[in-house]
Length: 189
Image (cartoon, rainbow, N blue to C red; front, side, top):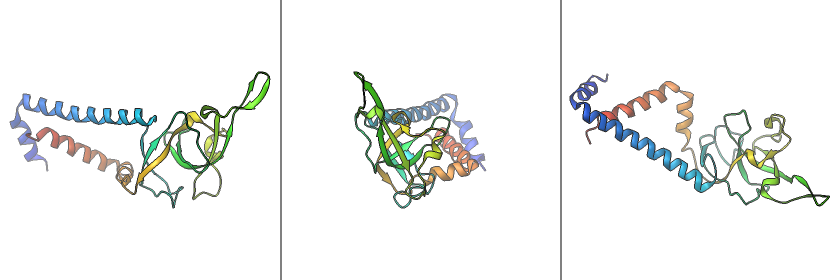
């Protein structure tokens, strides 16, 4: 199956093979740097996410690619679509803000709700769900600002479906990645 490619790989020589490996590593490092730069600009650990379920239909469908921002000094409003991550869960959840409240603080002996972004509590719900997300919060009554990954600023429909297919069929993912790596090694440019 890959006999021609292996013969080509043997003919290239050690120096050329090493150069190809370094070029491949350079491409990977560039991609990671771009990802981190996007994270810094948008103030979020994950500036791009894929919708994995139908809980937000008809606003977003499974496979839609979402672009996120997390402005540090801006409060979330009712109706904003957020992505949040609960400690202990790997997969972030994309749902709409249903209610907001503020944590009450005692200032000069007076208990008052200080309206700062970091004091905001959120309750979310999927557009296609019957109930709010309290059951998903794993013992929390409200989401705190530290749980929020970001707010949706834009999306591309169905473009993230490739990610879903790769996760559903891991052998296909390894075959594609292995093929791309092999092509990078035997390419002569």
